[in-house]
Amino acid sequence: MKITVVGTGYVGLVTGAIFAIQGNDVICVDLDDAKIEDLKRGKLPIYEPGLEEMVELGVNQGCLYFTTDLKAAAAESELVFIAVGTPQNELGAANLDDLIAAAESVADAIPKGAIVVIKSSVPVGTNAKIAKVIEDRSGRRVDVANNPEFLKEGTAIDDCLNPDRIVLGVRNKRVGDVLQKLYAPLVASAQRPCPVLVMDPESAEMTKYAANCMLALKISFINEVANLCESLGADVERVREGISSDRRIGREFFKPGASSGESCFPKDVRALISQANAVGLEAKMLIAVDDANERQKQVVPRKVFGHFEGDLQGKRIAVWGLAFKPATDDIREAPALTLIEQLIASGAEVHVHDPEAIENVRNVFGDAIVYHNDKYQALKNSQALIVMTDWQEYIGADPSVLRWHMQDPVVFDGRNCLNREWFEFSSFTYYSVGQAPVRFVRDWPKHSVQKPLGIPLTTTAESPMTTVPESPRTDQLNFPVLLPCA
Image (cartoon, rainbow, N blue to C red):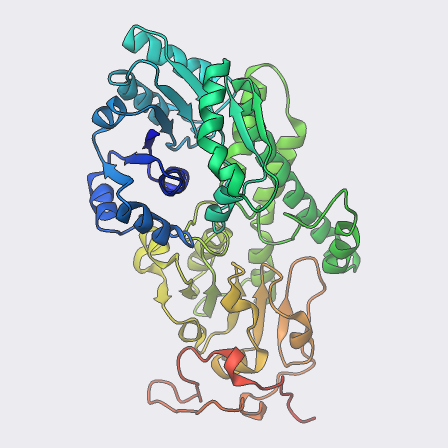
């Protein structure tokens, strides 16, 4: 099939690449000239594991193209997918300006019989609104369908190739048949059963919002439980294990941390709250979910300010993890940003590391913080380490390695991703979410911690403290946790 995909963000670019390698001719359209030129050169505007290789494959096979000319692309297409952003406006509702503008441009060129498919997350009733926009603009009726995406950043390629379900919101059988034909190769090759759910567009639109709100509810619930556990002396990780073993509950999206864990959840929760208000209903549960998520962003900052008794002036603080989740460079709704803002305001010297999100954060904070491509350089001489994203390279952090770099042995684990037991048998103060803090009995002198085996030590004029080289890989060190002598 000949397909146009409008928008080259997470949804549009992944969708276009997947359709292309399935044997379709795909043109991805964006109004940003620089972004399109970068894509033509193989430079992607986002980081998503596997996407660069997927795009390169589609381009090399001659079935994936990029352009800024939407009208020319639409004029040659059987299907036009619109995957532009729908950010929240000042009232919390979804802003449909970009979607309407794209629909108007498509209406000027779309051929007879072609189908417009809305891939963006949109309020209930948007399908009908866009159909009217196109009809008013073109003077003829055009079929408009809704096909919501259910991608998770960091696993978007697998989510596309092995979806849990495909939802098609259509008004007539012809449109449903065309879309089922498009998805048939993907359904056939998926590694697990993939139902194709055909329904009316309004139900499809609600399905997307309801799914995201349900997942946000699960995360907000376990965060509330974590806060209660910490206050009442229970261990949230033990509680989570106990309740998630129930098949009716499960483990997915049931991990406590510094916030909701997904960039689109707050936006979609607020959009559905706005829709409820518009029809005279009060979505009390969704309001509570949104409030809980916003409160949760303050959990780690409160621990940090509490430990330092409110005095962070001149303190050197290392922050590991800036993206809202691992395997992405997306910093939308990232709790690390809230934390860094407060650290800067308190006079702290903030040093940060993230495998992918450094440049995006630099665009926010500029020279107000110090950026490091090496996590151990960010940690050097720090008086605390705060982990805000559970990247795999952080999870195996060994206390004895951390101790060689740090001035003070203090760790705040905002994702409960470090090995708590290791810190229980080290000279660290360790704070996590939903668990009692681990506190050292006395502050062991730095030189009393034994040298990690296999790491050459150096002393520099810049820092009289003994340090290890950049980026030692703990999986290659092969040493146990070493304790000071009593």
